[in-house]
Length: 116
Length: 111
Image 1 (cartoon, rainbow over the protein chains, first blue to last red):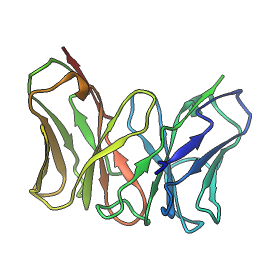
Image 2 (cartoon, rainbow over the protein chains, first blue to last red):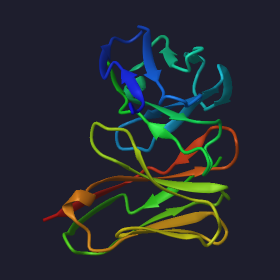
Image 3 (tube, chains in turn blue, yellow):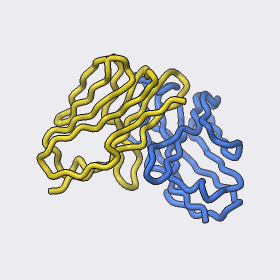
Image 4 (cartoon, rainbow over the protein chains, first blue to last red):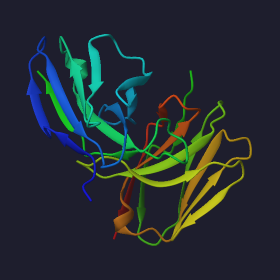
């Protein structure tokens, strides 16, 4: 079975530009979460979506937005890119919302975004 | 603000040695998860602990959840080069969809 797939794997953008990252969850998983991982740190929560509804939002500016489609895939959009947005963006899927023991997260390999 | 602090941040040991990684917080978590991440890949779930005082074993890895559900430890016995990677603890405190991650422990096991 395919795991969580993310595209693109690498991306280079210029300050002020816009970027769209894509994620396909594991088949049967209805919840998708997005995390940002800056080099040398642990991932930080950005969003969780379940059944196309936003279920949680981390401490990120409004430049960050996301949505989930009827097939449960998801997009993360970042506007007006800053140098500090350079990071590995991870998508994770789970069968249900939440992150407890009965709904563990399965992560993709991420999109490495570099802003110059 | 909930925080998880991991220690040590870096660990370099010889093959065959034992090690312990700690994950501490002042907050209570409903569950705590341990992940391992290799360069260029996403984190892979190793274990989830839910009950205070719980101990889980995964081959040479032993995970413990503190009685008060505020801290956890990962002990590796007879480390091998294949154990090299970034170890992350992450706490969950409800149905918000948010995992709080520690900053990670980078482990290098030399042959």
